[in-house]
Image (cartoon, rainbow, N blue to C red; front, side, top):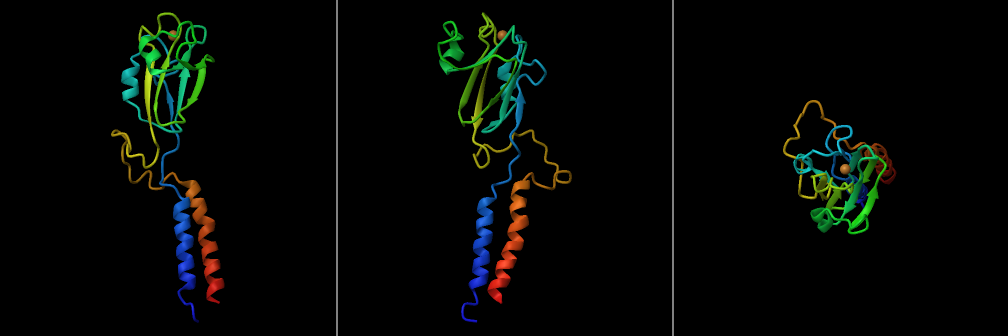
Length: 181
Ligand SMILES: [Cu+2]
């Protein structure tokens, strides 16, 4: 057979493609309930501490839970976050969340600022700044307090990737056998 290295190089290409299609295993998007408890978006909670205790990655979700007749959650600019002055709701306000159960997807790697715009609440500390990093390979890595449990979580959370492998491998073998014939 003249081109004896043909099939194996084809296989190599197939596997290389699969590796490219398989992203670095990453835990799925996390949901962060602001304040960590039901109705955790409230007066009298130190959200600077809360934000420090969490790691936020692109795709994660913030969940604001509150009594919507008493609070709201406005995404604002940094200056409005600092001044707490929305000028009646329009100044520096990016998005107004008012349902009482607001799921905010952190779609970008940047800092997000949220305040409650009820009179006095933001000035009283009902404000949170969240720094969102890029996901896998972003260089930020796992939060330091994630326990490493080698026995219980032996299987990486990469079902989609293994799915590719599941049909990609037999396909590769099939192609190989066709070529080797
Ligand atoms: Cu409030």
